Amino acid sequence: MDFTVNDTANDETFKVPYENLIRRILMHKTAPAVLSVVFGSVNKENKRNNNALSLHLPTIKHYDISAIDYFGSLWKYLDSGVIKWSDVAADTVHPNDNGHLMASNCIRYYLDMVLDNLDNIDTENYSIPQELVFGSDAFMNAE
Image (cartoon, rainbow, N blue to C red; front, side):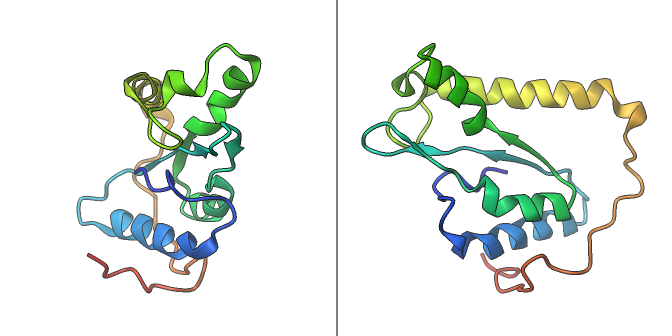
């Protein structure tokens, strides 16, 4: 699930919709797994904007779902000059082909680790917490 790409760390209006979306997915009759992929953005001066991972961590932890911080994983390479933002993004937000390839490699690596460890993963005893992290189900029926 990619939800946080345009969210910023100081805009709390995305907390409830994010939680409600995760909850709706987890409640689906097919009981899907959820992997949250967190992107991010830079400002016009190519300085990092903090992504919304800090806002969504309470929900990620509460529902015990996995998350990949694509944005966070890039910064050591960007800060060191190994790559430039323009190498991985088409603008201040959207990944370009290289950025999507890097994101897909992160996801693939994670999924390979899951497959390699299936015998150690309890897939039978997950239960969705009854309580909501932020106490609102305002977006549970959104379309």
